Image (cartoon, rainbow over all chains, first blue to last red; front, side, top):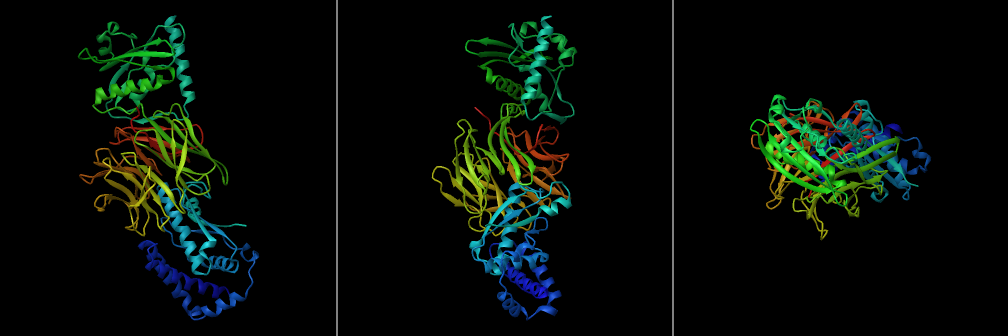
Length: 181
Length: 431
């Protein structure tokens, strides 16, 4: 089940990467990074996962997911400096969020994009938006409806952790999922 | 005894004016050989205390420019307030090159007449002899005007002491409990007053070219929107509130247009907004981040930050032809650029070896100089006379404003008593 989820996430990541490559809404560097990471993950996962995607997917559809299903999920996803690429480590939980949204069409989520304090404020707001949009794309590719998702970027204005060191910065380069009622 | 009384009054005044300022000045570096100048206390022949110590304000302005070394008052042999009381030999022996004297006279209706004269001590020549008048509230401004005139006479560059700055103060009380204030103050940090108070972020204040209005970004509705506020009346209006980003407003030189960043069409792109008709024109079209537009002095092109090459760099777009050119090449992160009035220099945030500083690039020679030695420097804004750049930096974990001259020789800080200070923007010349 876990493996299946992960495999599916990898497949989705590859799709996202492919989309990013074609779409006009991503940078060459971002999509390049995503391709790299996506394909690396695919290599390592291909032995156990290839071909089982469709089955796992229908298996999931049988689950009835309620609010409890997202209670234990990670809601904060971290990013590299000046990058807006979703890290593979977050795929599994994001997939579960997407599934919850798909299963609950009335659910609404706000994706708050954030950056660390380095660099300029307006650039960081733009960067925060790209991060939130990368998460948004991940969710919609996996079945969430775009009307369920709102993106707001705060850039570097709302740090999660204060401090001027990599430990703080790495916690501040993030997207937070906040569900509405 | 009369002298003593005057001194007491002076010190009292000085303390009062310091207490009023939220930002104070801390000069950290000046030119190697600043010009010695004596600013004698201005004459005041009334029994009540002098309403404002004009000479000390002028003196502080000249000192802050880094180009002048004012003479300490206790070393002055006399306090002349008229040309007839000046003994040039005394001032020469005191090592002074210039002497400024003046006199304040009360007039009807809370008004004051200030006369002042600037002398070349070596040539024993009068360089300036003028009078100014204004009410009590305008005394500080009049002092800055005197400093402007002295500075221009002696350097050939118009002074920018009688200008103002806006900045944002931010206090964090707990997680998600903040207070942001947009503040306006004199260029020396005196007379701060609040323009906007909010629990949500405020950023990117930009002056209209006539100095009467500000455009800025406020998150007060929970989403970013761009507002224009009239400084005299306080009246404000929301000019953009599109889905997504509404950021980085920058007033065009003719005052009719705002350049800004919107992501309503998918990506962060630069647009221009005709303020009267509200007509939007899209300027950039690229899948990368395009933001932080500013104008060339002739209004014919827009400078902006874009990561279209993989990392943020500075580009220029000529509006008539659509020609786009990359301007910055040194370093792996260049952002938020401003062109100097003469179009020769580009001032921007520049990263080298992981450190963010303010740098200036000579567009003719391509030479890039790093101006600041602080870290996490951002938000540079150039004084209207092109002499100084004010920017935000971090000092002991606190955000403070700092100023550096365009040649990197002169530096001073404007530390604040409370909270973080950021997003400075230097006003144009004010009437």
